[in-house]
Length: 305
Image 1 (cartoon, one colour):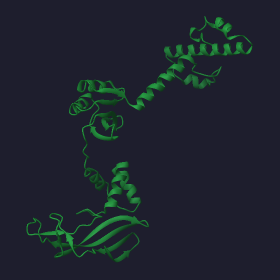
Image 2: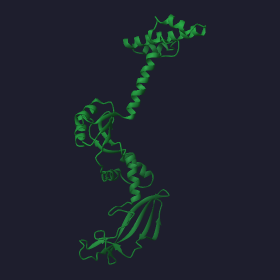
Image 3: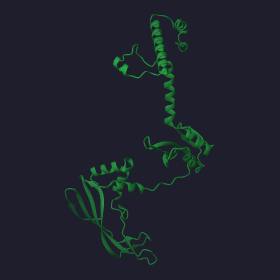
Image 4: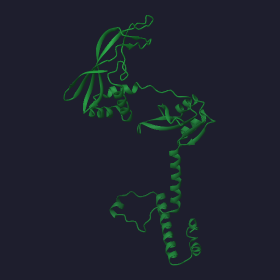
């Protein structure tokens, strides 16, 4: 490209270019031609510079195809940095698509306008719809989990290839029927990672009875910590202070606790009292074996103290 002129105003740059090549290759048959048919002007938007919008005014030529067997009589010269019929450069288009995918069309449009690359949210949405879904080979290990299209309103199912670590499909619902239907179309699956949902479990069992079902890492760790927490609650009190300091006015405004909660707090108080007594007697010099005999009738679960 040969730069011809630069026009600058308060809001934008206009850069005028023309092609430096004397010939062009036909996109259909691949034969070069230097027979010019006509010229026209393209206006192409590029990445902003110095907080100003950048437009490229490019003089584009049309050529006659010299191949008599080619179906194209006239073709337009192509440029590597912009797609045919597009009004934005490839690099600007790439930035806009990535920004939109990481946010949403409305938020991305506001951000782009701040960066002085004006574009509407409808155009950004059209870019997303133009993205081609990549093809994938038949998976053998997949992960299944639900996600929210709109929180507390509408949920879907995301399916990920565990080998490539890339999503391969999105289902419009989280019911077992759609999951089961999808799994039946992929009999090559040998292992399925899922959450604790019984809906997914039954769908996998119905569609692929020979497939191995495993818990995903997040739910596996959550189950481990929940079990650890419950174990600690069984052996430790709910509070670590001898007296609760609750404001009288606050306690009056609180609703009366359930009977199960009252029993749980009562048991916690007994555990805490037992721990304090054991520690006090131990500090006085009594042996652990003697303390075991003393408190075995108070709390059977603390016989190991």
